Amino acid sequence: MIAIGWFKNLEPNDLLLHRRWPWHLLFWIGYILFRFWMYYITVKYYPAVYLEYMLLSETFSVGIVYFTVWLYKRLFERKRYLFYFLTGAAGWMFYLYGRTVFQLYYLKDEQSFKGNTLADILLNNASFVLVCFLFVTSCKYFKDGYIRQQFEAEKKEQQLMAENNNLKSQIAPHFLFNTLNNLYGLAVEKSDKLPGLMLQLSGLLRHSLYEAQKPMVLLPEELNVLKNYTGLERVRLEDDLELVFEDAVPVDSTLHIAPLILIVFMENAFKHSRFVQPAAVQIHTRTWVKGNRFYFVVKNNYSVERESSPNGIGLTNVKRRLEVLYPNGQHQLTVSNDGSFYTIHLELELSHIA
Image (cartoon, one colour):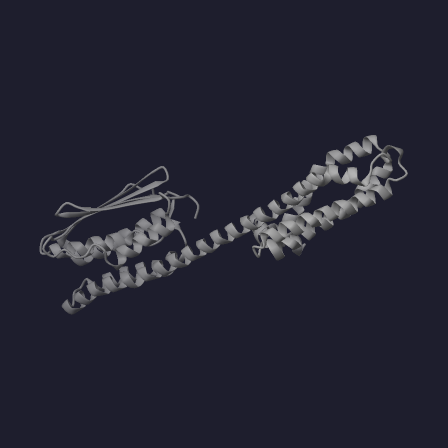
């Protein structure tokens, strides 16, 4: 029962990548299907001794196949191609010779077989045997190539996941650094806003410690994090903030998104906007979905005289995360400015599966 449960838990791809026996099983099933017609004709039209010979001679076939696999590992994989093909061809011809001698011995008393000679059988089957040798070689070559390709893809995926986790781990300190700077200013002023801001910060950090450790989170949940963050900034700025957050994403949406992928853009918007003070900070955010496509737009004013770098740590980080998590046309990011406003336009192809 334990063995059966273990087998059920294995994915087909895992079996093909980490176990040898499924490949051997597939090969011999194919071989049986290939030989089925010959066995059918033998059973139907020939004496029983022919069937006995065929069954016994299959041991020769099994032997030459595994000899070829052994030879492949010791010569072909070491790039000794010429020696491999010469030795392999010689081995298969020797196999043909041994099987033919056995055939002549086993069927010597059959009247329908007495007209065959060793030379005739060898000449008639030599080309077929060499084709079989090339076929077994091809099977081994493509099997090893498939496994190598899958391992490379798996290795690349693991590297990308490790890189993503590393980039994600950098966001929380970056976010905390920016927020603590704000709290420091309020603490110096002994502002009454400080306790409320600290509670909201606590909620955001709780999200970054627990929910953000998941590879994907529900889109509405991640948007709530943005709303909490903008709420924190609203408390800090009060009358100096003109904030619009138009969220058209359904609250029951089952689309999933990478955690903490959006908050950097909001941080960036507030960072640039602070330079316009004492004028009002203007930030306009829009979110909506169309099919599986998620749209996120952030527009904020900034001061040309005190413009900061648009390529800070946070933005560079999130651009790289987008490349890792949403490659091959799954995302489109546009950053533009018209002299008064920065506009971030992000499109993501999302999935309903976490």
